[in-house]
Image (tube, rainbow, N blue to C red; front, side, top):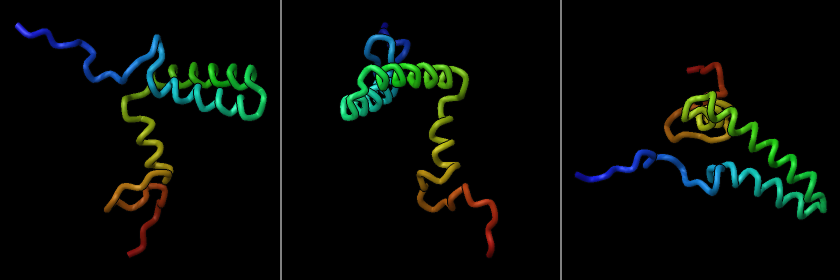
Amino acid sequence: MTHIARYIDDPPQIFLWDIDDIILFSIFFGAGILTGLITTCGIVGCAMVYILMKVKKTKSEGFFLHMICWNGFFALRGVPRSCLRYFIE
């Protein structure tokens, strides 16, 4: 019998944070290093990661990609932008 990992499709983790949480914290911490406000930006980064983790737990898996596409920040080929509400032929 072959053992199949239970969480094979989960994103990589470092301690308790997923990789996207670490990226968000790194952006704020890096901005803190550049501006000289390391402590403030580190605390804001931790707060943003906390908010992101809570939103990820309550929303479905493709929620953020849906919001990015819906608001027109990311375009799909062959599909009109969904932020446009009226189409004229």
